Figure 1: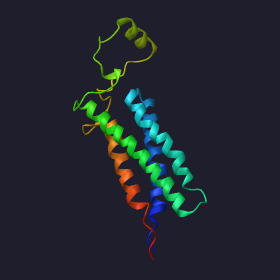
Figure 2 (figure 1 turned 135 degrees about the vertical axis):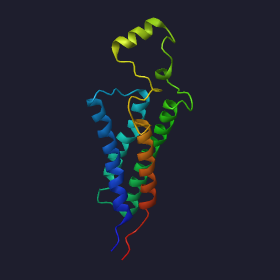
Figure 3 (figure 1 turned 90 degrees about the horizontal axis):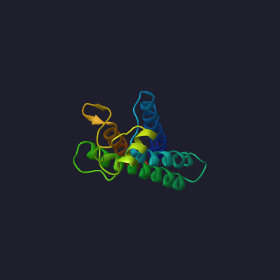
Figure 4 (figure 1 turned 90 degrees about the vertical axis):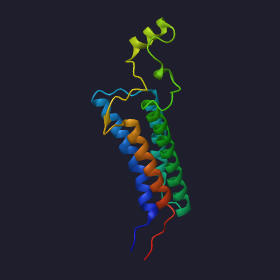
Length: 160
């Protein structure tokens, strides 16, 4: 008997955002400080986890599939934000936030106040890379790949 695609998609929809968030939080334990766009990528994953958990409830298969597919959409949104953030880091395009502004841009007193409140973390400079891929790039690859897997697997029924 072949595995039910929805069952596998359900686990991907739950475990992928949980693992990516654990990795993000873990990187903070090693001194990395998330920028504004890093936080943007986390929000869809925060939402995907409870939605994916709902797919484990004792409800009809079509309802489970809707929860899994919605979690997949949320994961894809995070991946899309990751593509945008990675593009800003690689200087393919400009960012849209103050964390990509060059130092010395804006009101000096406001910048000093911000700097004293928290570390200045620029969104256009990756803090860590592996094989030239930043954390935003890895989020994009894993999230979009996971979303594609969820969308491909969820509609499949078990065959005998």
